[in-house]
Length: 616
Image 1 (cartoon, one colour):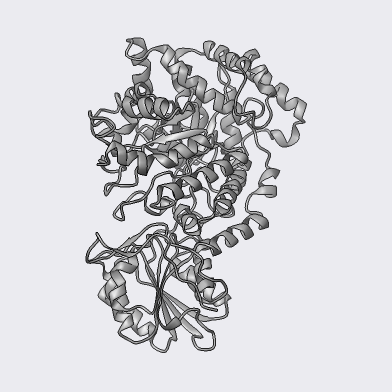
Image 2 (cartoon, helix red, strand yellow):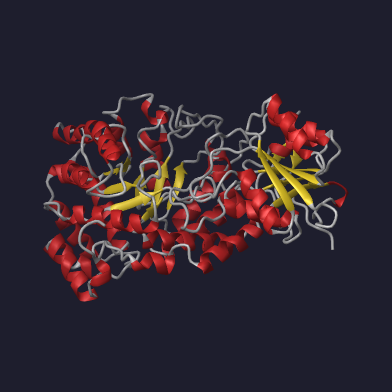
C-alpha cells in the first residue's frame, strides 16, 4: 500500500479541507468545484488558477508541461529492477522522486513499465503519485494518463472490462454502443485514478497498408468515423475522464509507422478538409478535453515539412485558429523516431511549445528536454507568458476533472466499478454486433453440432493484447468447447513452417471443420500455404481474420468455405466470433473499410458496408 489510507476514510468536508490546505489559498476556491466541474469555468476560477501559476518557480512551471513514464507498481517502493530502470532512463529511483525533482504535471502508465498489475495496485500507485504532487512547494495534483483504446491497444487488463476496439465498433456502426463502451471504460479508469485516456483514435484509415493505425481507426468513411469519435468523447467525459482525440491532423493514409520513421501524408488541403478533418471537428464540437498531435509531415498544410507536432502552421494555424480549439494539445510520445529525425532531442520540446502544444509526452531523456525548455525561457527563445498559457490550460483541465477538490480514489471503488458483471455483459453484447461475415459458401455457417461436432482451431498466435487469457487459437477453442463442440487447438504462428503446416494437416484428419485464425496475410505469407493446404483436404475451412479485415483478399481464390473478420484477437471479440460461427448469434457487422482485390488494389473486392447474414 502507498502509505496511509486516503479518500475511503475521509469525509467530504475533510477532503476539501485537505486539498485546500495542501494546495494553498489560491486553489481553495477551485477546490470547491464538484467532481467534474462545469465545462466553462468562471473568470474568477481562471484568475485563481493564474494566481496559482504566478506562485510557481520557473522550474515548477516547466515541469507542469511534461507527462512522463516511470517504472514501478508503487510511487515510493517499486521493485529493485524498476528502481534500476528509473535510474538508468530518468535519473531517479521512484515516481515520487521524479515528481520532486522535475515537478512533472502528469504521469503516463504502461503495462511494460509495471504500472498496471491489478486495479487495486493501480489505485495505490495513483494515490501515491497524487500525494507526491501535493507535497511539492506549490502543490498541484497530476494528470494520470494511459492508452486504453481497447481492441489491440490496452494498458490495463483483466479483471478490468476489455471492450471491442475502434474498427469493431465501426463495423457495428452504433453510436450508442460506442458511447456506452467509452463510458464503461471511463468509469473503470476513473475508479483507478486514471484521469486522461489517449482515446479515441480520430484517424480515418483509408490505406490498407497502414502499419500503425489500421484497426485502431473506426473506419474509412470520414463522416462515420466522426460520429463514433464524438460518441466516444461524450462517453469518456461523462464518466469523468478526459478524452484525447488523436492523431492530429490525421494519421490514416500512410504506409510508414511514426514510431520508427517520419511518414508523409500527400493529401491536398481540400482532401485533408474532406477526409481527415471531420472527426477532429466532431471531437471539438463534442467538447473534447485534449487532442494529440501526430509525428507526420503534411506538405500541403506546412510547406516547411516539419512534423505536425512541431508545426506552428498546423497546431496553431489550423487546430487553434481555423478549427477554434482552445483545449489541451498533447504531443504524441517524443521518444518516437518520427519526431526525432529532423531535430535533436533538445530542440523538439521547445519547437513543440512554439508550435502551440501544451503537454510534452514522454521525452526519451527528461533531463535534456526539461533543461532545454528552461534554457529556452532563459534566453528568450520561449517567453514565460507562452508556457504560462499552456499551464493554465492544463490546470483548467485538472479543475474540470475535480482534481483540485480531491485527487484521491478509494480502494472500494474498484470493487464497485471495475470488471463488474454488468460491464462484462455489456462488452459481450456490444461485441456480438461487430463480427462481420464476408463469405459463406453453400451456407456452411452456422456450424451444427450434429454435423460438425469435432473442430480443429489452428493458425496465427501473435503476442496477446494486455489482459487476454491466452493465444487466439486457445481462446477460440475454449469458446467452441463451451458451446458444446469437441475442439482441439494448434498454434502455427504468423509464419508457419513446412513442419507446422504438416502438423496441422495431420491434426485435421477426422475433424468435421477447421477454423483458421489469420493475421495480416500478405502475398508471400506462409499463412496462405497453410490455408490452401487445409482446403485441399476437402475438410470445410473457415478463416477468421483476427486483426485487419483485408486477409480475405489474399485467401479468397483458394476457396475457403467461409470467412469472417473480428478486427482484434481479444477474448471478447473471439468469443463473439465463435458464437456467430456456432449459430449462437447472427453476424451483424458491416465492413467499415473497403477490402481491395489482391491482384488489383485499385479495385474493390468488398465495399464499405458489406456483410452477410444468416438466412431465416
